[in-house]
Length: 421
Image 1: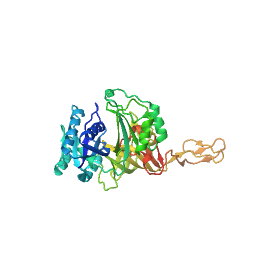
Image 2: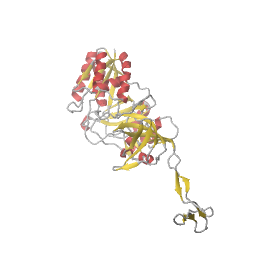
Image 3: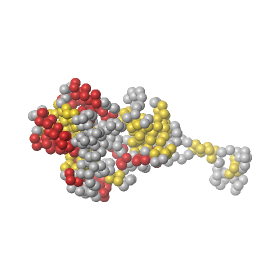
């Protein structure tokens, strides 16, 4: 029989990684109870959920086995041995779904990626379809486990994750920074979002105490293998390629899809008109408001978005924009921005002398204007069109500020795009 195994919420901020635990499970399956078919899947869920795990990513794998009971025992053994069960915020769950049933979980999976799902909803589905499962502590991981099995990845990317030797867990990672930039220079855009040239940072190497050494993002297997051969690091213990919904914008809700209201803890694509000039607050965060069919909405480019904030600061009332991002505290946290239309802005200025071409000076209170050199005069100021240093097109945050799910412009078939690479 073929069974989908879904796993989630086995990690914590103190260590472990659900992908690593999945690799350990795959090794045990291959050695004891069956075979894994194809690549495992790494499915990122709604990034705004307050009680999410570190990366809010769940894993699923398709297994061919003659004994589902033994399969469940293997998964249980690995979770009990390696999951961060001592952490109060770690509540693992695993499900075992027959291949034919997985398609019935698509609606639930889409909701888990775009909406807020309660544990009772997952338990209801498990009970309705008599799905074998493992629940540890509160078992919140059952939500992600079901979603990872049911997710329909019409658009997907690949991630090659290399893992550290166990004795190095929790220590500082050793790697040659320049080798990652050399790799990106040669293989981009078949690999992407692995380094941030604008901010001189390698973004595919984590700084947490988890087992991951690096995660290379790319479009195909061959390129990822080449990328791995080019980067120079400490020894790699294990590696695995995951099919993933990274860089797909799968979390975004298009407000044109009969949406009646927008809510916190959801991510949207919304068009509106800028109604106030952007302003900075302490910390370097930039805010502005747009008028939409839902009323005025506050938007923010937070400090980690770096150069992207300079684009936001150029917006002016009257500009038409489309914003992409997640809503928290009634504010859209910008991931991308499309300037649809740049407003024409006129400002009052002293008139220009028609003879010498220089600006006239005031001739005195209510006396109009004059050119001292040419003796020309004018009665009043003139309206002149202000030059705008922003143009229609797409703008994005740099890779170091990019969320897992946010689709970089290099993957979008759009017109004019301004890429921070």
